[in-house]
Length: 274
Image 1 (tube, rainbow, N blue to C red):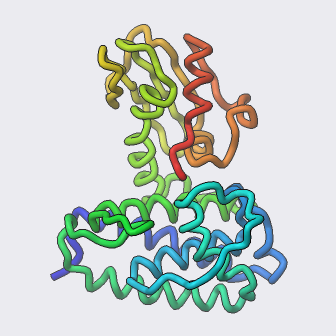
Image 2: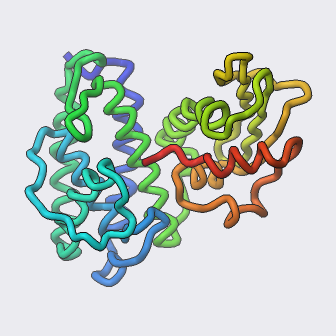
């Protein structure tokens, strides 16, 4: 038995991103591990700690027993507290300790993926005692690790891989969240259409249609006379969706047409990651 075909793209994307992360951080000197990243409250060391910690959990390792400090301003909910545990426990680790643990975790995870024969629908452990299917867990890991690869690239001034396998997983993951952003969070008018025109290394044109009940659906067909159109580049789309920048900070990179209040409401509610 080998990895199920529907899981292979997620494994390939994870491998591509984790190897890129390893290559990025291997030559860093001690001080560079403390550089801030666009991920709120996290340094380069913190992002790598998160990558290690989440893959250790995917391997079935027990979570660390650790008390978080009370002054972590970026930790505001239980999900963030859960995630922060794997990060804070490594905050005083040295550069060699970080790279060694990362490499060892990659070796173990690669071995696990090579031997993975479970069905995509198999239930596995998720955050805060939840359960996910294996497919959901692997898809999220591929998305999450690519986003954090981009965090590290921004912090270290090493842009790249905006069109990698992980980028395509991220595109689909973020697009799945778009109907809720438009119809529920931004409260777009019923029986309306909103168009997103994204250009750059990853390009797409998508329409969110809001029906008479206020439900949003994602469509590939362009809309005639949309209530609003948002045009932006792929990197800006990702950074807004993942809460790395505010709409005000990238106002010069987002072009809006149609209802200005609706466009503003969408951009204010664009973040879909926790």
